[in-house]
Image (cartoon, rainbow, N blue to C red; front, side, top):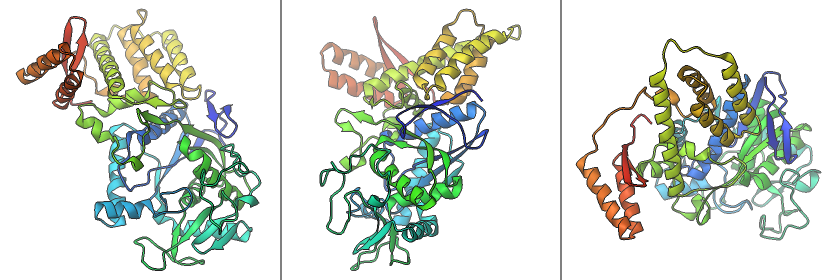
Length: 474
C-alpha cells in the first residue's frame, strides 16, 4: 500500500493513515435523516466520502463501509427540544412516519446511484437497532454518566474529561442559547439526551419501551451504537460534514469512549459546506435544490459530480448555475477528448511502462495527499494533452484514473456521433441571441435553461454560439 495522508479533524493536521488491521479499513459515514429529499449540499458530503472510499480501494485496501439511515430521534434543535424531524415530515406529507422513511430512503439511494457513488457495505437503520441503543445507555448509566429529567435520560458531559476536544469547544465561554438553550433540569449547557420520553398527552408513531419509560432514542446515540456493533469499539475512519463537529460527533465520542474506555475513532474527516448566494444550503429554509432540480434544468448527474471535483473537500464551494455550466462544459470537453482518444487506439500501439508509471505516480501522489482530487483532475488533463503518449497509453491511464474519479469513462463511445439540431432548438437559440444583444440577460438565461431542458446545451463562442446535444448515456 502506498502512503496515504489524511487531515484528521481531531489533531488538526495531516496524518499518515495506518489502519488498525493491515490491508483493511473500517469506515463509518453519517447517513441521511430521511424526512425529506437530500439537497445538493448534503450530496457533497456523500461525494467526498465516495472519493475517500475509492482512494482506499485504489490503494489496495479492503473497505468495510457502514452508513446509517436516521429514521427516528433527530430533533429540530440541538438543544434536544422541538419535535422529531421524522414526525414533522410525516405531517407535512400526510403519511405515516414509516412510509416517509421508506420513501425518502429510496430516493436518497437513487440519488447516490445517479451520482455514481459506491453504496456502503452495510446500511443500518436506527429503528432496527433500538436494543443496541438501550444497551449503550445502560452501560453509561452503570458508569455514572447519566441522569434523568422530566423529559428523558441525559448524558452528563461534566463527567467526561475530554468533552469538546474534537470541536475545540470553549465550554465555559458558551453563551446561553448559542450552542443550546439551557433548561433548569440540565446540569450543564452541553448535556444531551440519550432517551426522550414520549409526550404524556399523545402517542408517537415511533416509540419503544425502555427501563426508563416509553420513548425513543436521541439522535447521537444511534451512530455510536451501530458503528461499534459493525466496526468495533475502535475503528479507523469516521466521516461527515463540518456541521457535525461541535455537536453530533463530539457527543458520539463522549458516549462511546465513556462506555468502552477506549479511543473511539482514529481518523475524523469532515467536508466543508456547499454554499448558495444566501449562505449554507439547508432544508430548514424551505425551498432547496435537490439533484432532480438540476436534472430538470438539463444537467446530468455527472455534470454535478465533475463540478464537485473543482474544489478540495476541506474548502467551501459556492454553487451557481453559471459555475455548474462551466463544469458541464469542461466535462463535455473531457468526454469528447476521450472519445477521440478511443477512436485512435490501434493494435500497433506499444505500451511503455515507464510512461504509465510516471503519470500513474503523479495521479497517486495527488489523491493520497488528503484526497486532492482537484489536482488529480489536472493530472488527468495533463495526460490527455501529452504528445509523447500514444492513444493506448492514454486510454490505459484514463481508465485507471476513473476508478477514483467515477466519471464513467467506460460509457463514452469511440468517435463523435453525428446528429441534427432540431429547428425548434435553433429558433430558441436565435431568440436567446437577440435577448443578449438587447442586454435582457434574465430572458437569455431563461431560454438557455429551456434549451437545456430539451436535451441540448448552448455555448457562447467568439463568433456567436454553438449547440450540442446532451448525451442520454451521461
